[in-house]
Every structure is written in C-alpha cells, then in structure tokens.
Image 1: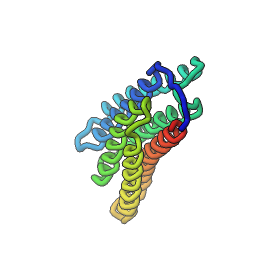
Image 2 (image 1 turned 120 degrees about the horizontal axis):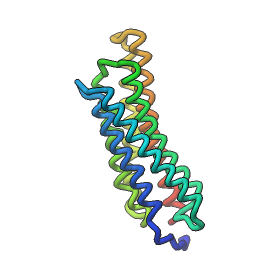
Image 3 (image 1 turned 120 degrees about the vertical axis):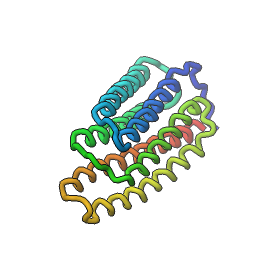
Image 4 (image 1 turned 90 degrees about the vertical axis):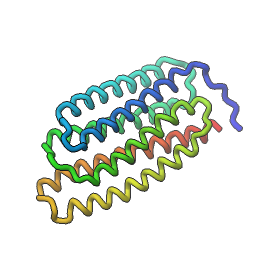
Length: 205
C-alpha cells in the first residue's frame, strides 16, 4: 500500500464539491427548459449565470493548484477532474442555448429520459466529491455512473431512431440531432469524470 500523507487543507475537496453542485443546478435548469410551457429566455439566462459561477469555481481550482506546493493528489489529475466537471456544465449550457436559439417549440418527451440520467449522474457526482478526502465509498459511485452511461447510450439510440423516423421535418431533425448529441456528450462527460476519480483512487490506495 502506498503511504501518503494528505494535506489537512480541505480547499480542493471543497472546490470539487462546489463544482459538482453547479452540475446539479445545471441539470435542474435543463429539466426546466424541457418542461411544457417553460419560459426559455428566463431559463437560459439563469443557466448562463450558473455556467459563469461554475467557471469561477474552475478558475479557483486552477489558481489553487498553481499556488500550493503540496496537493492532495497528482496535479494532472486535479486539472483533469476540474476540466471534466467544467466541460459537462458547458455542454448543458449549450443544450439550453440551442433550444433557445433554434427556437425549438416542441421537444420530444423522450429527451426527458436523458435529462433524468443527467440529473442522477449530477447528484451522484456531488455526493461522491466529499469522499475524495478519505478515498472511501467511491467504488459504488463510478460503477453506478457507468451503468447510467450505458442507459444513456440506449436512450440515445432510441431517440435518434425516433427523430429520423419521418415524423419531423428535415430542418427540425437537424436541430434536434444537435441537441440529442450534446445531451449524449454530457452523459459521456460524467463517465469520464467517474473514470478520473477511479484512477485517482487506485493511485492513492
């Protein structure tokens, strides 16, 4: 077993938890955007604010890793985890923005299945982040996120088949495909974050 004394300073763990909590907020706003009768401009404004707050947390992580001599785990892993969380928020913001800019009025209800997967991934990730300090109780997290990513893949295939079924006009297909692909990318992003945490845990064990 590798003997390593971790710094008592909890700043990194607090920042990663804060970053993951931004994703919970983003996923909730995404679900709101898909709801019938949603005020798209208002939701998009709040998503932009949430994305900006997430960026600030990411910048704080980078500033912190560049300013301290001892880090709780490898600097490369800190960068990878911070950027991975930030990428997911960017993708959720992108989905909301596309719905607004493309002026999509009717969204297939099947998209809600993907957003539910995203919300669950966000909740699990936020709950897992505080455990980075002890490196305990993390295995169930990355196993479940991997399962959810597989569920997202199945949803993705079904949704693509539906939008290409001939039910939608060509221009609507193009709009919906962009949205569907971005949702899939966000779910994939959660799996990458989970894989990064698994790698960190293995190195530190």
